[in-house]
Figure (spheres, one colour):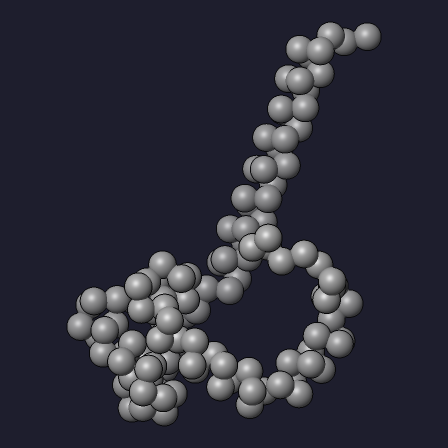
Length: 118
C-alpha cells in the first residue's frame, strides 16, 4: 500500500494533467471563437456609422484612435467595456425568441448549472 506522500504526489500529477487538459480546451475554444479581422472591421464600420448605437460609436472612436481595442472590450479587460452593455441588452431583447429556441435545442445547456462567478 503506497504511503501518504506517494498518494499526494499521484494526486498532484493527476491534477496537473486535468489542469493541462482544461487549459488546452480553453485555448481551442478561444481560437474557434476568435473574431476574424474581417468581422472586427465590419463591427468597427457599423459602430462608427452609428448603426449600433451611440455607446458603440464611442467605442469605435476609441478603437480607431488607438485608445482601446475590440478584443480588450469583449474580454472585459478594457475600462470602456461598460459601453458595450447597452448594445448587448438591445441585441438580447431583439433576439429573445431566437435565443430561447437555441437554448431549448441545445442538449448540453444546463439552466441550473452554477454560475462561474460564484
